[in-house]
Image: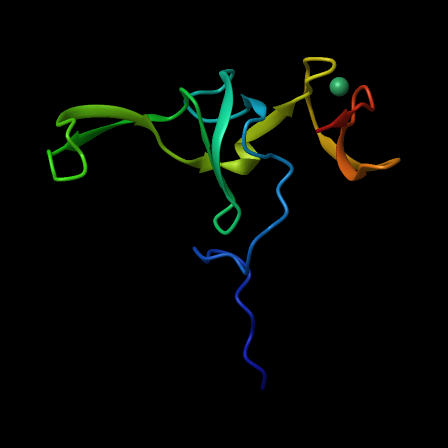
Length: 121
Ligand SMILES: [Zn+2]
């Protein structure tokens, strides 16, 4: 009998996924303790399907001074949240939207806002 592929409950996803969110996007947080907050995407981790959003999911780290880190003490920084917890805010219509794909003459395939249809850069 063939071994069954484990599809749920596993911590490590199969591989990099295509996420609709990119670095420097403005996003709206849809769930979790920071629901309703907006912020800029600072980092995207496609392997884990997680994003770091400015001002969202702030954690306190107790940082000791080292050779490279001079700023010691308690520092606050955003921790990664699930990419599925955020929605991209369309730069054209300023609304949180689902993201599709569209072909744009001379620019290739781009993301597009499912509300107003404008391509997202
Ligand atoms: Zn739009």
